Length: 307
Image (cartoon, rainbow, N blue to C red; front, side, top):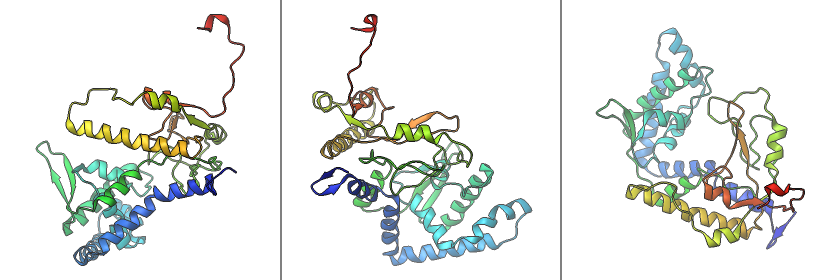
């Protein structure tokens, strides 16, 4: 196993997964929320409202739909919801917030969506966030809490795990990811996962292909937008993405310029490479900068295909 300055690639990979871990972000958010006595009281009040909501008698189908929530700790349920909503820096569609939070793995998607929407409405009464309707009748959720910049930056970087610098773990079931500490639904789309057959052998094969960055390419060319940036916000977002990407490229090269991209199927069986800053299925620039780590001279090419 390769070492760099006494640290193995596995050690580095573990450190990166810890840095980008959503679990750590939740701990940071919870700590920040609990540090405020006023917010702690609102969380407790929200938990009481949730308990009261769940204890009422409803029509049969709703009663059955709410039953799984009664087994959960109401404070933890409220915290799960708040750490999803409160970091939002701009109003977001209610449907999008529901998608971020998940739907409790109900067998019927509509049951999960309805239940989460109701939960959001219940907790909204403590004024940690607002649910608003625009002129077209669309519902939005707006956070009333502003977190420090270091927390917001940490949240942003957890959205995309970097490529792995050690060989991904073999996928043995539908909930493996290849990463050392991360488990997730393998099939893309929160409601599409299942315990049926997936071609894990193929995924393991493509996951185990070592890749490298074309350093000469990256030093000679700069990434440019593939469409016009018509607003200052879009221009700023692209500039930030490009800077963050080059920081990622530098880290990968410093770790030996050998990495692995994990892959996941969608419900149709199509395979998608995972990654934001580095992705073999990204823009033309993103594709062009990636090459095989193990290089071989291609032989036997017919003359008509030679340039």
